[in-house]
Image (cartoon, rainbow, N blue to C red; front, side):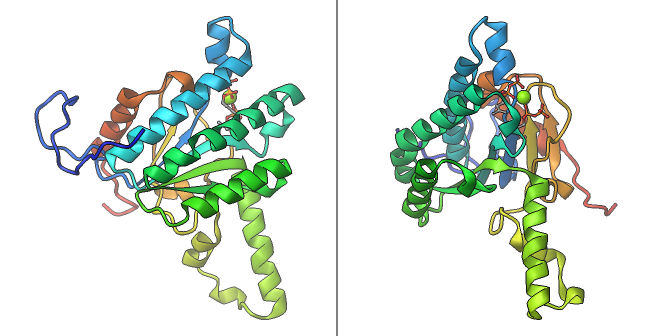
Length: 255
Ligand code: IPE
Ligand code: IPE
Ligand code: MG
């Protein structure tokens, strides 16, 4: 399915008021902690695996919608470095869904100008998944409509640790002076290097925590929490989050 053109400043037929609005409200980079698949399944007396499967469908819809809206970058928390502590069969279900998703959606990403990116230590995943990811990264590297960053085996503390270790190595080699390490340099060493600053961080399922997601990047992001469980998160929910973002007064420490 090709993405429909969504011109900035066009009239959104779904908007309450007939006024020209930018559907992104100026948000360039959105990240989502996609939580609540298990509770969604439980509420319907279904196995957890079906909650995760429905979660993938929500991912597919939101990626399309974000692309149509003109969002530049979308980062999705799919598997944390702490999620390995889940039962082996659940980890295996999640990895199976990831395998399927990359294979089934890669053509659509490419047709729609989506550049895939992965944040987190994905090289620790099964070798066939690493191969699928590397192929997808290479195939979509030249696309520039939207960057879709999927967080896999991602933990913000692990990300910062990797950055510190690399810088420490450079200091030891004498190629970096400790006093010259800058904030920009650190930002550029994070897994999100090259992406626009994180404008809006959304978490579904009513939990009010960051669970080790984008701790560096969220320094001045706007936060949005909704009770909606991830499999039920849809276009209207995203529009609501963006509208809330549009109503915020971002001061960045100024007045
Ligand atoms: C989010 O849903 C998906 C992953 C963490 C992989 P959960 O599986 O955490 O669902 P809940 O939080 O138990 O409802
Ligand atoms: C965060 O959700 C990780 C993902 C959505 C991938 P969790 O369900 O793992 O977070 P906690 O355990 O509630 O903090
Ligand atoms: Mg959860």
